[in-house]
Amino acid sequence: MPNAKDFFTNMTVPMPLHKKLYLVFRNNFIKIRKRQNCCGHYGEPGC
Image 1: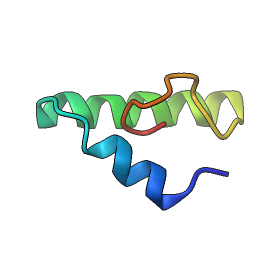
Image 2: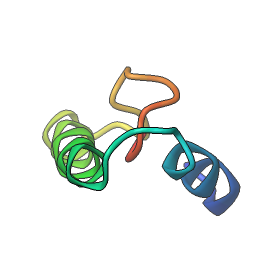
Image 3: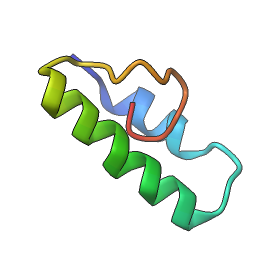
Image 4: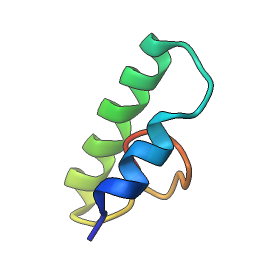
């Protein structure tokens, strides 16, 4: 199960806010669709 520390660490990645939000939605959609705790894109926002 993902924890809050990893979430906030991944959100501090230096990139534009719009790209972070896109990656959060994309990676969470992948996790929901595959019914897994990780989307496979380690270190990206939302994973």
